[in-house]
Length: 260
Image 1 (cartoon, rainbow, N blue to C red):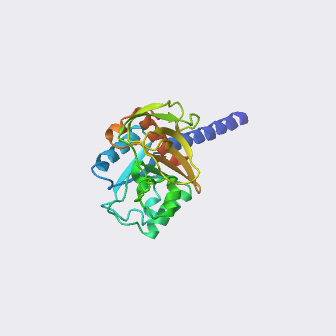
Image 2: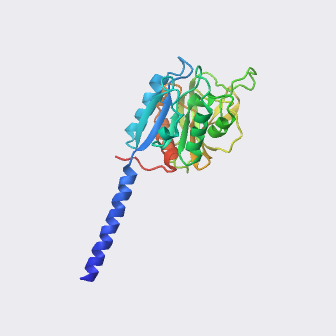
Image 3: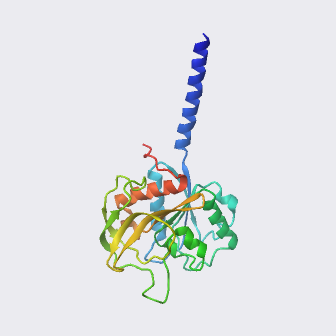
């Protein structure tokens, strides 16, 4: 009788732990997608941001909140407002918006440094040209300068081969080299340690350029994806897989199988 009771107790506890683990695994990742400004009409954020959200929504892993910084310029000013989120995604390049406040800067850095995630998408790295710590956060950044030889840029938008150089990384696993119809960003600057996942040979820079990479920042994680000029670029199946996995990794440090 005692053995039966003990056995029942063990099964009950095991079931409780399994149920809790399942519930945790199914808990949506909360992402804050900041958008609202970019080089227009080249980068139509009003179209790409909803599509980036849809890709994440379709994975059944995320709960995405979109905020337009042109309507809410103080989104980063409150650390309490950021607490509910696991990852901040930036599809935003400040063309007209002035530099964010020192408080906002520290809130963003602390968010990542203390263990959460940040995602830098396409030309977002060109933001805050005079903010040195931003450059460290994103790893490589688009530099604007009067010196054409040093200026970041790209050749004509077109088709090229993207090479997966870290096939064992969970973000890139099972993804083969793939053809892209997109801009190929080149001459991004910075010397931070990065983990390159995808790269391509640029005819414009005559160099091999990192296009998807990760880096650590304090206890947190940064995922940087240079693809995504327009909706057509976002249709690429390999991009879509890299996008979901990369954002999940930034938020949690893991990449889980898709939830059916």
